[in-house]
Image (cartoon, rainbow, N blue to C red; front, side, top):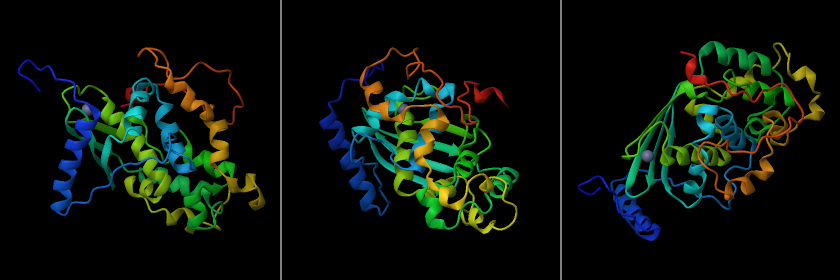
Length: 275
Ligand SMILES: [Zn+2]
């Protein structure tokens, strides 16, 4: 930063070079470096990755600020992302290399118990769970707003070392999406992050079967196909929507006719008010 707090524009190539140098230093120190690299424009393609992103977007306090993180993530700015129990740490290449820290609360014991009970018998194996192969009932339970496995904004503390730091800068937004991209390949990290044991979802089989009863085993499908219905969003349009730049105050997506209501609401209640 210059003397008056004005930061000169740094070209992408220059930023990349600096970031690469910085990361090489970390590697030499023996620190793990794990960049988020997308294979195309799509951030997440599996149930777990998509559900993480859709969950964030359904909260109005995030929805307006998140979109600029997508472009940042796509151009390879999240140069390191580490997910541990209760904590996400990342390095993001901006005018400088910034450090992003996200604290995510564990799933409360009672909630986790209730999820396990409701999903009992609905997931046959760890492979099915991680592939997102389960009934619609199980999927809805896992994704239930504020009561499922995905955190609400009230359960996430955000921070970034950049000077633009406000509620959510583009570095934090890029990291939040980066986590979705990471869950595409390593869905088990969601369970680490939220400090629960995914095996308990399978071990509970044979007790009570309230949700799994609603769908026969043969009806088990890739849950990601049902995600769009459940969140009431058209994910196929995501790419087109974000290529057109929108003024900040407008909603990130065009208003839509409610399609099929399958239980989950796309509410716009600010989760932060619940203290
Ligand atoms: Zn920042």
